[in-house]
Length: 207
Image (cartoon, rainbow, N blue to C red; front, top):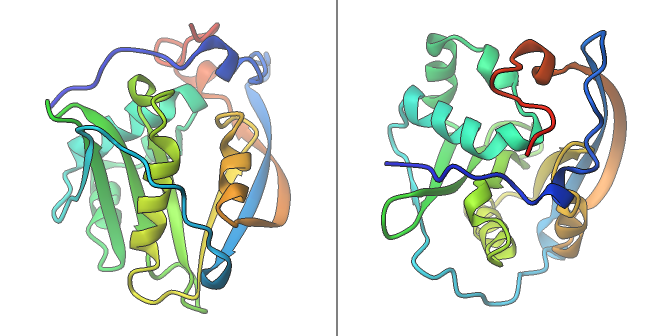
């Protein structure tokens, strides 16, 4: 099982601010809601040899590899702070699902993570979603998001929710709204900058 060593295109990272000396990273988080009734399916697409499968017993090692491969360019880091025991408990929770995309050579292409118990009203949370850098720009994003929503709605949920922030891919919010997601609130937040915490991993400039 391997990941391809690559990075997103430089223009896809140009919106990320440089690290600050104090280590603070200011972001705007947009929370989105998609009622089942307004879900707009993505047009049919050919994913080539990429397939998606659920990890029924996900390992901590696999999850950490996925989280890093998909999230490092967008400065994801919070799951890095969890111990192996904490992460295993999360991955093995009854309402949690992890689905992994791979190509015909078993190269990791992306993943999505669902929480079916996130909300009292029965809505499902897309906790994380994304493709690895090697699979960006191959017209897989809409197809992969559609498969994510298909699974999220598979148990009869009235809505699916997720959030994105100003560090994510610059087209992320547009792509979510294209399928029917609507913003329900925004939040300004100060994070710890992983480029300051782990400069050997989160390089700046990124490419």
